[in-house]
Length: 325
Ligand code: UDP
Ligand code: MG
Image 1 (cartoon, protein in one colour):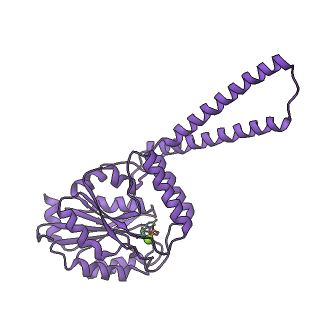
Image 2 (image 1 turned 90 degrees about the horizontal axis):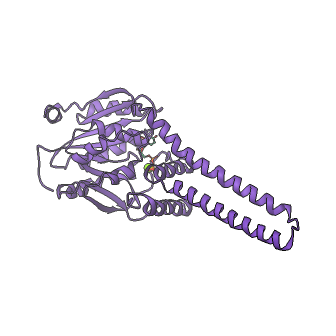
Image 3 (image 1 turned 120 degrees about the horizontal axis):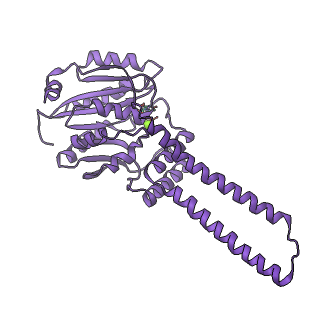
């Protein structure tokens, strides 16, 4: 790693009810950061926690002059919290990391090395998943397959948000105004030179994951609808094929009736066809609805979040120079 006193590094951490791990996280982060040959700011984004997290953050802010707090007005979800942190980061390089110690802070020097080698986005890629069910692994794999096949971006698999971003990558992300922020997709979508660094992911240190299957499903739908219109194409292709089949069958019936008169066919086949068509129509309308719903929220052009408070790092010197520039 090259020495650079005039370089500022920002670490952005979204936190939501993380009082159980926060102390430990801060300790491990600090012991890594103190050995870095550059100055750092640590930006905690409090995503509307309803436990003691904010108090603990304020204590950290008082005891450590590198710590900044972005306090959101309510829980906006991790993706928005991350965006809020990126908006406030002043650094030349910005690290994004979870507070639950699933992303080991000890990997940060390696990320920085690659960043200094000129990569704009250096992401941490898990070697293996520990403590996750087979169902989650299979569904996760399926999701990445769909995204790779139909999305405009090639999402790296087994990759979370843990990464370092160059200044221009952060500026690119900050320029995106959309409400539906599927960060994993956006990180890749902005392009620039990207590089993976491998590591073993630990199970959560304490507390519990805020992602249940329902939220993961929503995240997957978010990812797919934000980056592909493939479901729309499927719906119309499917409609076209069924209509064509129905047409061909109609002709067949006509000819048969003309040749052999009209023996009345069973009622069951009729009801099957009616229900099948009704079902597929509802499904197609549902898919349309997903997209229209997103158009609806995007057209309101609401701000992404509101701030309760922003406490900048007390270590003014370098950060302030940056702001003046
Ligand atoms: N998080 C957040 N807002 C939320 C949910 C989570 O800021 O609404 C933060 C959380 O505090 C943690 C990170 O996002 O630092 C990852 O959350 P979690 O560990 O629950 O997700 P997982 O690791 O299971 O994907
Ligand atoms: Mg986690």
